[in-house]
Length: 204
Image (cartoon, rainbow, N blue to C red; front, top):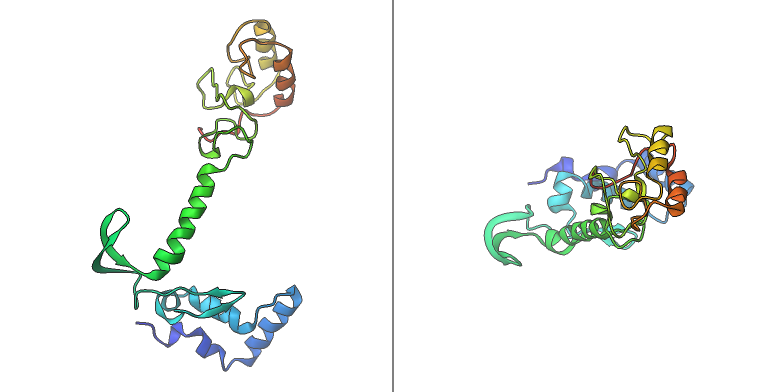
């Protein structure tokens, strides 16, 4: 059960100096929140606050802290969950925390920075569009961001020599745009990659 150490709002009520300090800082940064909002938010992040003493509390800015299941977020009482029986969990978990985590994870898994239709989480060229994901040498870097033809970690004159030797041939690691032939289009890509390491890649 929560004790007096969890009641930040009670301790704050008699601390004029702290109230003034918080108020001055909120004014300085132009925040619409009050000192009570700040202390309430701090209490909600404490053990007792998360579990009970902040249930339904107005935290300012349109935020209301969700409710625990008495003083726990998961009990030994069973209930039916979306995937079958589970221990009963609190309204805070079912209505706020777990949906938010699912949203964050979903955004992470589906984000596609380079717009090639391949989510970042499995894209072997994170900053260069390469829908085909061709990786001729199988090093985890797609051809489109891997002109490191000798796999020494940097694109330099040694790789340029290998690129020149492969010019006009079909396929291979020097075919950076994976169109089936090493040509002037690949020269342009090679220039952009020169002097840099391969990647970045999510599959490394």
